Image (cartoon, rainbow, N blue to C red; front, side, top):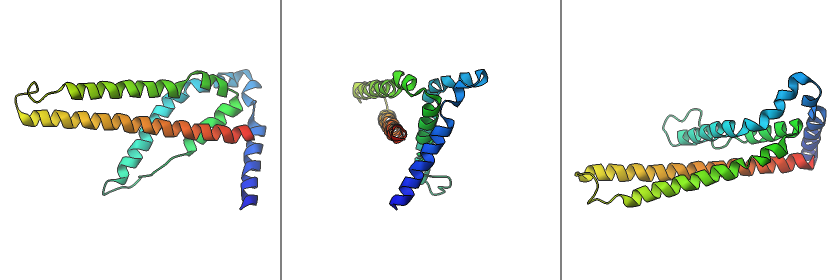
Length: 166
């Protein structure tokens, strides 16, 4: 088992060494140095993809359902490493900004929920129940998305540690 682990490390080490700095060699590949700026957009898409895959697990027809997709953070970290733009990506403080946004969104949703009072809400009690249910779902969705972003951050950090050791 240890030999297999060492072989995997050698494979990753060879991949990094053979590809590191390839974007510096030609003017045509220099725009790849801007890859770090794309990571926030594709990470939003990835988190949405993972959340839809997990939601499918609870459904009867759960084809294409999955629990995890850790190839994305490993691939992103690999590309950041071989392009030499890891520090630029870290400078974006993307995950801190995303987390701050989710905290604000959650606070706003909770404040909106607390403001609603059955006496001041719509004239029908059913409408109030539906609105309260929607607010509760919104709070849960925001919390789940925030947790999924934290998992992505942890996976990217773990992958960065792996590539730093190589």
